[in-house]
Length: 252
Image (cartoon, rainbow, N blue to C red; front, side):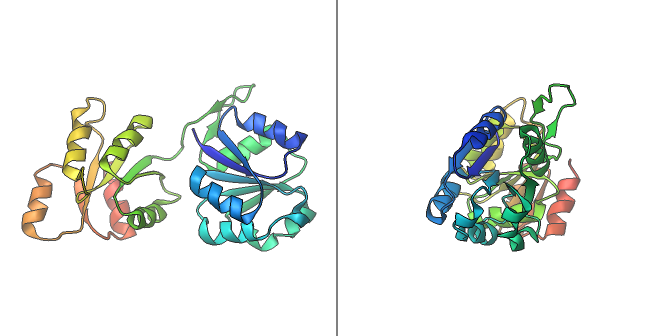
């Protein structure tokens, strides 16, 4: 289930919005204060952030700066009047932030959330929500967080990206959602790429998932050892965006 972090002062309107969103998403409410905000983002790891701009003049403006500078990959939807939005106007320039004019119906907020997360809403009269990504899912597995961030940035907007920092976490992530392709680090501690691939192929319903190895060692003997495992392909670290996209597009 996608996670939404909601900033704002709790009132009847916000309570109603939380109730509506909670039918489809995991929702967490937080005060719009910089110390609380940064800690909550790190702990909750939201897929999207919603900010109610009611009382915007009293808000800690550092929160917007933190979101723009350090969490620029998390989409942000604000809900407020044009006047309330104008307090933070410069943050809407790069596309991370968008504003819904208040008052706004819950169904319109949900539709905006789905659009930003590449989810779709069925066309039933009840507007029943269907959590079905429009983009193919790529699972990135690497024990280096920096590598994961760089690869995720390369694929942003083209694929729905999931990440795991170990082979064991990869299996957990696969259990939650079957990826369309896996980019797997060959040299990982404890449970390396070979062992992870063996676990994937041991599962009948997972064995056909394409796997591309990432390796940081470029010598003939090492590459031959990688190829003996018969992955769909392999890439040398660090791959360029073109190399990564080209290899992925061969198999999905």
